[in-house]
Length: 260
Image (cartoon, rainbow, N blue to C red):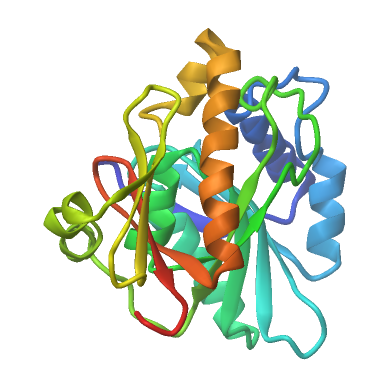
């Protein structure tokens, strides 16, 4: 893989390039990127940071972060996107920036139906899903999210903790314990959607293989998945569970808070 360099961006041309990159990722018109360059410039001017990953001169990823409430020692990542294999470098650059300015945690949100992002956030980085937000943004019109409801999972990342490997995650978040647990919900495809162990300490919930493709091909079915997963998560979070893992085959692990 070509070496990647990460740098913070302050200049107008660099921020224009990052804005255009986000537009490509979210499939918006060139004239309506999700994060206009002038907004990025204002965020940088107010003390935030825009990080960009480059392979030579080619942009391969970017992320934007700001600081949270006064005295919270927390940063908030507004947006991040990267090509395969580049995401961790981008997030680690954000982590180093935030730690250097006194933060100890970082929060952000993502679509809980996108299993690969859940796996990256919960397993690779070791963050935890701490809040389930129903239709957080309201209707969205970009080329990735359009036609769906915008539920989001907030994750909280302890910036001082070591990361976890994918292998460790696989041992912890799937397999025989899940298969032995009683089913509690059926998915839109008729198969088991969620299981709950008899000790009432863990819940497992499945997501579709590729919800972005499903939204484009069968938006009504994608919405049924959204609402089915929402039911499991809102019930579980209301009972004190948090999202702590994601298996390779698309199953979340939700663990009762304080029992990890």
